[in-house]
Length: 199
Image 1 (tube, one colour):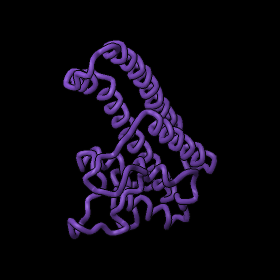
Image 2 (spheres, one colour; image 1 turned 90 degrees about the vertical axis):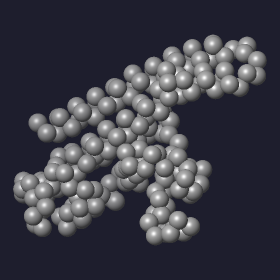
Image 3 (cartoon, helix red, strand yellow; image 1 turned 60 degrees about the vertical axis):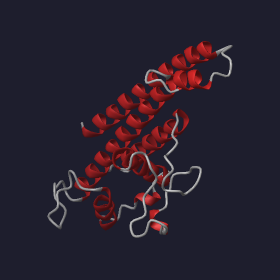
């Protein structure tokens, strides 16, 4: 039942994303038609492009919400794997709850159970989903911030998501194509977990 639910939830997210993508295409066509033949009136063009009802803002909210849902589903899957590896128990040996555990605790618990996520499908994409979700929720879409000095960034604080550069004041750029790749990576993870009878 749990496996069916998580796959069902992923289908819901994917269908939401596909419907949203179609909506973005429709709004983009309307924007193009509205701007067709407009002289170089940059204020008007900017107003049309970045209007709250415009295609650009619609695309961004669809992408961000999809990434957040994917991250949530991945964490749910990892919690399920951790519980199964822990003989169905809801707590780790350290008496921490598995449900609601942070990602590093889950990763550690899975390594302790001889389940190495780094060997699964495209693990780097799963980490990118996590990093993007955290940026959207906690850092106003910015890349990881340095912890010690504002002028130096340690290797562990650098972004793993490809982009323009490593400046922590840069916002993440996300689009429909990149999110579709993240959906595929999530699907592959779930299929691999199911094939190994982990979910």
